Amino acid sequence: MTPSQQRYLILGILAAGVLILATVVVIALTRSQRDIPHAQPAEVSPATAEGFTFFDVHRTTVLTRSLRRSLSQTLGADAIAHTNPIDLTVVNPDFFRAYLSELHQLNQRLNPPLGERREHDTTRLTYHRAQRQNMPFRYVELVFSNRSGLPLYFTINPSEDFAASIAALKSKHGEPRTVTLDTQTAPVLIWEQEGDILVASTFPRKSGRTSQELRIYFVNNLKQFVESEAQARARQDSGTREAVKRAF
Image 1 (cartoon, rainbow, N blue to C red):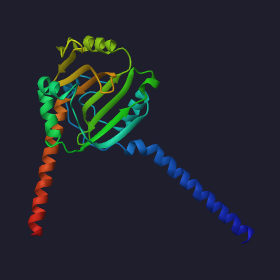
Image 2 (cartoon, helix red, strand yellow; image 1 turned 120 degrees about the vertical axis):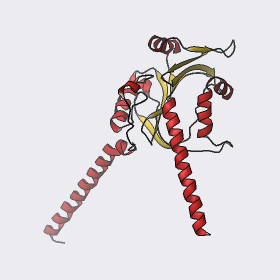
Image 3 (tube, rainbow, N blue to C red; image 1 turned 180 degrees about the vertical axis):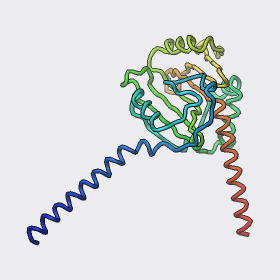
Image 4 (cartoon, one colour; image 1 turned 135 degrees about the vertical axis):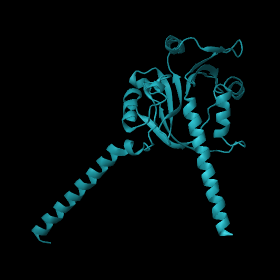
């Protein structure tokens, strides 16, 4: 190989390396963007934007790339998952059925009666490092509909004194409904606002550790999501029946 050919070969290898590096950088920079489904924006009036919020995310907030980046700046790096199972139960099934009957009925529609696993068209963002950002949360889980982009429910486990969270909620939303389960368990606090529900509970886990948890349920969004899924399943079942008819 002549010196001239060697130079061309080296230049070609360098150019290919630069192209590969640029491709990797582009993929890395746009990965978080590609992980957010392009949901059809929901049409809402400004008046419906009130209610429970978590870092300014409320019932009419649509999950976008910029929102995900903003939440990561506040709560630390997230983990993202799609097509997730949904279980709305809080405290225990008996409590859930007795005191949150509307949510219990929605939960039954979201899950098959025989207990088999059903995954839903959702995006789940989870945060385990909020404490590193000086945020008083041990764990945060935010679940959004991929159909509308709207939030469905949030699970928040405070890492600091639970009383501070309760005091802030009472100051903003007023006195909650109080449900006393027994003399050895802290009462469950329930706020309702504009149809949505916030539950604050303290309960022992099987490990023996006491769990402090806040749940925000965007009830109207959940209802719309359940109806949308039911319609999609009906269309799928109809298509399956038509395919069987054609086959036989």
